[in-house]
Image (cartoon, rainbow, N blue to C red; front, side, top):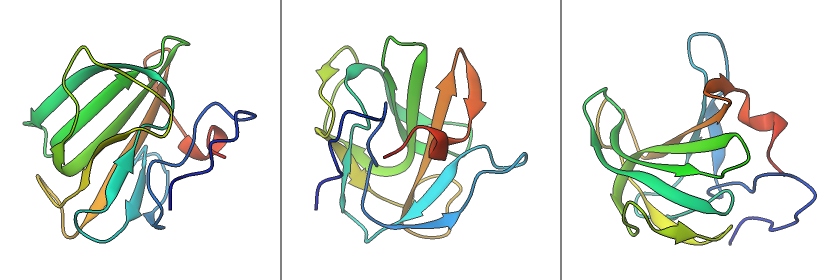
Length: 126
């Protein structure tokens, strides 16, 4: 099912799944496990600013600029369904769960940046 689109919180969950690794100093993101090829949704409306293979071990990655000092990063994707420069809406399908890059199984590595700093996504998700 699609994530909750309640607008009381800045961001919606990008996929339905379970957290397999939480946010901590040496892992400033959430890893959310889900079946391979599951749809990945934009956590909020914004402009796609990056959609390609990241050489950092992140594998196929999409980055969305939400223009409210927030950016979201979705990594280890199977692929992207959007192109850089595209405006996406909250809950729009942007890709599929994969296991690309430095990954041990199908999941999405989900980061939130506020003013360029990695922050705990759980503080922003509904």
